[in-house]
Length: 320
Image 1 (tube, rainbow, N blue to C red):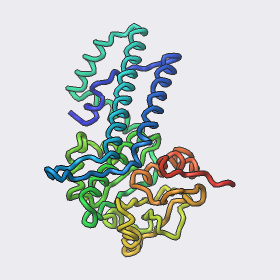
Image 2 (cartoon, rainbow, N blue to C red):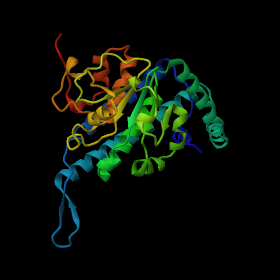
Image 3 (tube, one colour):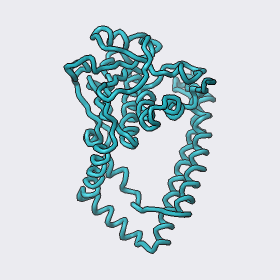
Image 4 (cartoon, helix red, strand yellow):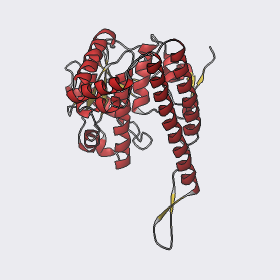
C-alpha cells in the first residue's frame, strides 16, 4: 500500500457539476475562513512552560494553554469541514443515481490490488510531461551538522511541504534534495509513501549539489545575501535553495558555500515589488512556492510573491 493510497482510501471519486459544485465550494470556503481566523491567532503566540517547584514537573503557561485551546478549536472546525464535504459528495452522488456503496467497494478493491495508484501515477506522469517547468530546483541539505534537533525536524517538515506543493502544482518542476542523509533522512523515511516521491518528480540523493552537474554555469544559488536580483527563471538553469532553518544564527552560510564552489548567486526580487514588515528571510518551502507561482502567474513576480508569502509577513504592494 502506498502513501497516496492511504490518503485516498476514505474518499469517493465523484464529479460534481452545476449548483452542486457551487454548494460544495461555498461550504469549503466558509470552513476555510473559520480555520484561517482561528489558526492565524495561534501562530505568533509564544510557547513556554514553567517548572512546578513541588514535584519538578513541567507546567503549561497561560499562553500555552490558550494556544492549545485555539488549536483544538481549529482541529474541530477542520473535522466538521471534512465531514460536511463528505456528506455533500454523498448527497450529490445519490442525486445522480449512483451506487455509493458499490463505488466504495470498487475503490477499496483498486486500493488493495494497486490499480488505483497505478492509474493516478500514469495520469500524473503524463501531466508532468505536458506542463512541467523546464528549469530545475535543488534543495541543499548539507547544513545538518550546523543545526539543532528541532531545526532538523523543521527542515524535514519544510521538505515535505515542498513535495506536497510540487505534487499539486499546475506546472510541477523536477526537484532534487541533495546531500540528504543523517537525521533528516531518518525522519523522512518514517513518512508514509516517502519511497514513492520519485514518481512525483521529487528525487532524493546523498550527492552534493556540486556533483549533480558538470556545468556550474547552470547553477544559481538563491540567497537573500546576494547582490544580484533574480529577473526570470531560465529553462536551462538549476535553482538552489539552502536547507537552513535558523538563518539568524547561521548568517551568510549559504552564500559562503556558493562562493566557495564558484556558483553564481541571486536573491528574489522581493524589495522590487513589496514592503515587508518582518524579515525578508523565508523558509525553504516559501521560496519553493514562489518559484512555482512565478510560472503559474506567467512570470509575474508580484502575484507570485503575494500568492506564496504567509500572512504573518504582512507584505504590502509598493506603489508604482
